[in-house]
Image 1 (cartoon, rainbow, N blue to C red):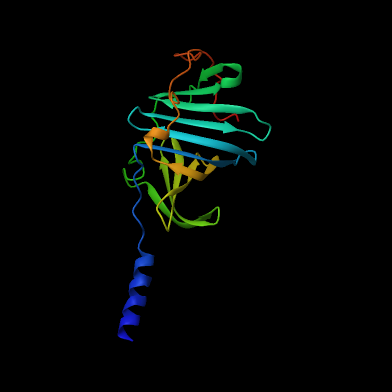
Image 2 (image 1 turned 90 degrees about the horizontal axis):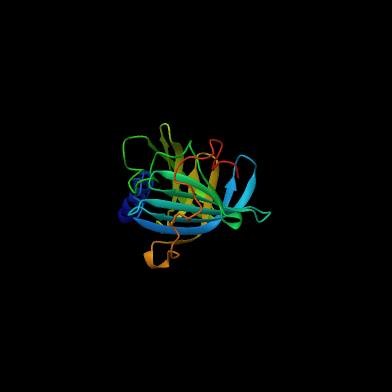
Amino acid sequence: MLREVLLALFIATASSVTPSPPRWPSVWMSTGSAHYLFNNQTVSAQIYYDWTRPAQVMNLMREDSYTYTIMHNGTTVWRLERANRSCCIDPQQTGVTPPRPDWLQIGNDTTYDGIVTVMEHACHSWTKNVPDVATFSWLTSVATGVPCRLGWLNAMHADFSYYSEDRNLLPKGIFDVPEYCPHVITDPNCSIMHF
């Protein structure tokens, strides 16, 4: 009887402990769907991340098959439309690197939001507001620790149906800036936010 009481007390105490924010691996990729909150649209999403470069690429496709890429390479952020070979630098987003692997652990601005259901999985949720940059959230499975969602700018939630940290699975050249892309701002109205 005492053993059962102690076990119940341990479980209750363990479940009330706030988990520490996770650290991103140096390389990861995901595929899934993203819900764009500004216009209530769902898009297909592929996200590739490599902090050793540092670079992040988001390939997004709307319901009408319009496809675009957000490429964050170093401190430059491009908006690409590969089908028509157009590309511009977003002057509002350029100047910062992709999120560091320890972005949730730096400072004291990370908030644990509790457990959220993502595609029928219980996930821990953390949110961080990076002043003058953006608000991001990162969710990981309670059962496995595998990431299940990236929230970006309170604008989009990308739910992961596939996730890997295997560098060998990165598509060859995924972080290469196409030759048709400018290396200086040529369009002051270029924006990665206009999906």
